[in-house]
Image (tube, rainbow, N blue to C red; front, side, top):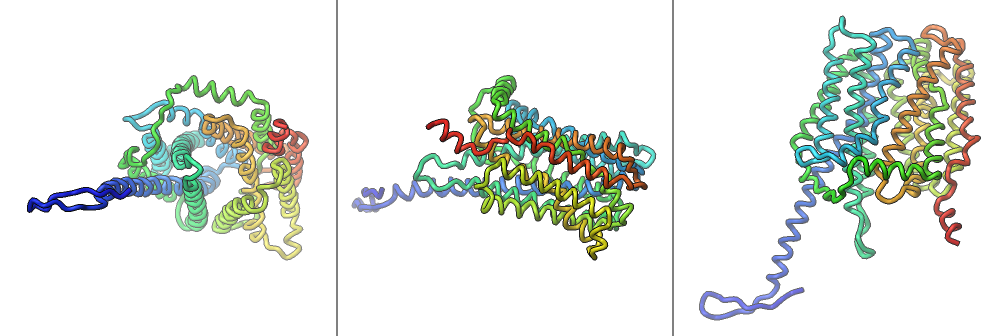
Length: 470
């Protein structure tokens, strides 16, 4: 509102003025707007670089595979056992989330955890880079990979929490408010992760041919050190996060999570989802040896294969939003499960040399279909998280989603161990792949097994809710 008022002109006369109150208000608005833009830039720096590093983690892990195979001379089963055992810290993600919610460090509850996680990663990768050859052993490498994944999982939980808090802060409070811009931040971090994955796989595939794995570990150690330095120089106040008014302690938060898990529609759904991963014996280590040792596929082509998988993941996100979101979740997830089994049968034809006889080079198949099959199992996560968002009780979203992802991590570890047992059963070794076809056939059959209990997947939450109301 514009106001009229009188002011002195210095000569004893009084003049009328207009709009000074508005000017004062505008100055305050400009300051708030400037602070908001500054906070947004700092958030994008912290989260953009953090999620980019998260996607880039495939870069040193490609080096780990070759380091274990060529440096430690591990057989396929031992390599796969170590890979899956190193993921054990990912299972405890709900605990990290509850810990960061409950305990503040120097008055901050997100930034210090990111710094600690980046520091742990830097220590582990520098140790692997500079470890003397006489000190390298299976258990030493396992310890530092566990330490690295512990740090990575802590960082992921803290970064996800900042995204969730910022998104909640940006939700409009009234019908007249502008649409929330939280989706922009989520799209931003999704793209940052994808770009990190593309860069990591492309550079890693080329670098492994020209440089030693230890040099790759050193480079990534420097990158996470930069992340650590960026984090310690940012104070959480600069992020303009909403103040946490909750006084819930660890016990209360755990009680609320357990109460949510006691609901049959939630517990049965998560149980089926985890089982759909755990019942499939993964043969990733065996296929890695088959492609590199038997077929002599170059590491750069393996990197391109993973890049194609990342591209398929991004394409799936777009297609789901535009074309598949209206399809029943049960039907969509079941279809993805069937598609996985079909591609596994395709792998049997590949190993048999059928595609080669049709004029399709092995490298082309590995780059395209193998890359898609490796990432296809993650397609189920997107529609399933939509289900969980609809089923989740208010105030329990973060802990429930962390529990879901930790369940998936544990299920994939079990899948890896079953894959080791299957490889031993069909007598596949680093030099003998005669039983690989039989192993792939068993794997495809196990992939179809969860479909018998697909009724545990909620079909249409909104439709069911309307039916109950009527």
